[in-house]
Length: 105
View 1 (cartoon, one colour):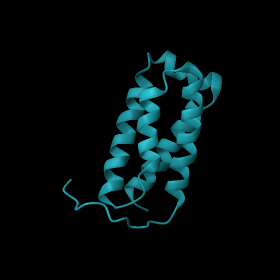
View 2 (cartoon, helix red, strand yellow):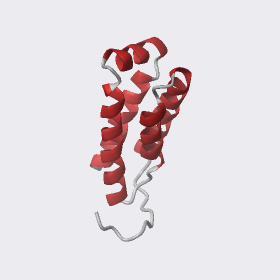
View 3 (tube, rainbow, N blue to C red):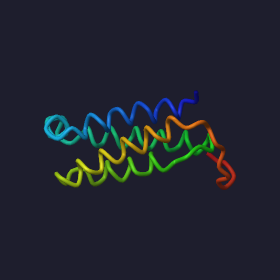
């Protein structure tokens, strides 16, 4: 299992915790919204590793979008839930190589 798939599972679990309505809101607000910044960095690292391994990136891209928009109360809950589902789906799939532009990372 590649590091990007492991990080997809880890970030998917974190997103699932943040998708629990009262618990996730308490975590985000209790940390002064820095939990969203941490998740943004985690999704960016996962995205870069997925690009290097030529794996699916849709979960990480959705996670970055979620981290940027999750400060909106109800929208954040829905985005966290969708991101968790997409990350766990992409993390559970066997590695399928995609043909992205040449790897210059």
